[in-house]
Image (cartoon, rainbow, N blue to C red; front, side, top):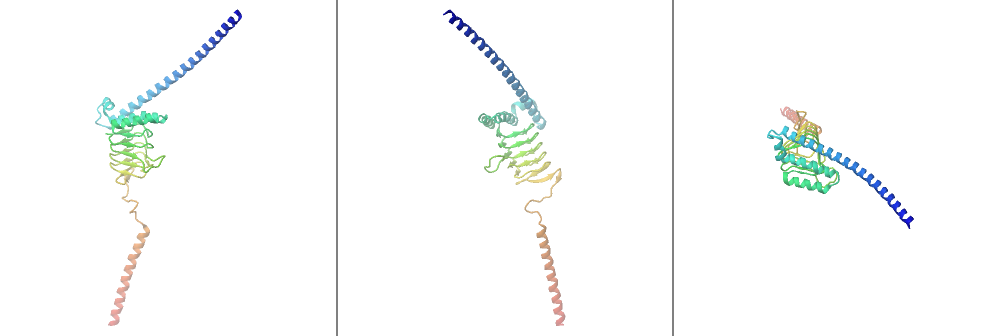
Length: 265
């Protein structure tokens, strides 16, 4: 009996020491994981703080009405919309679609700006005045762009996949403009107010009108020609030949009349 008790005691000691080792190892793993998570959280917070600082600086740089950083932080709906989108997009990229959409919808009600969480937006976006701006799911916006109120970056039809425009760097899109379709607006382009853009816009160009036409590239005015009224050299040559035939027929009739008069005399 005593031997059984001793064996039980030894086994209990062994199990206790084994459990202690496993607990210690698990604690070390948790500590390492906790440290790793803390480092990631710190890096994410540092990145977010820099993005907020840069976004505030962008507004101060481009809006002469902005009198202080605090005013931008508290009162600029376009800034709030961009800030909300950065949070929603981060969740969307990690697969948290529903929370991302919830943030997007809340931001829409507060700011009047609707940006789908899937849209990709570069640094330095300035949404001036904000109200009525809509940016679709597959839209992409480069760095340092300016968008005014009432702008739509939308799709056409019910196609899936890429169906919204890609906007380059340093692009300005005027109030009320509609950019519709999966094409590219090149770097440094300008879209005039209320323009309806249905085709690609080259870099360093200005597009105006409904539907929008490119009126200048690299500060050089583009000839005022569209796809319907471009001169057709074949039809122009036919018209020239018809005029020549008409003139020759007139000359022949005049010659015949002269000959008939001479015969009568």
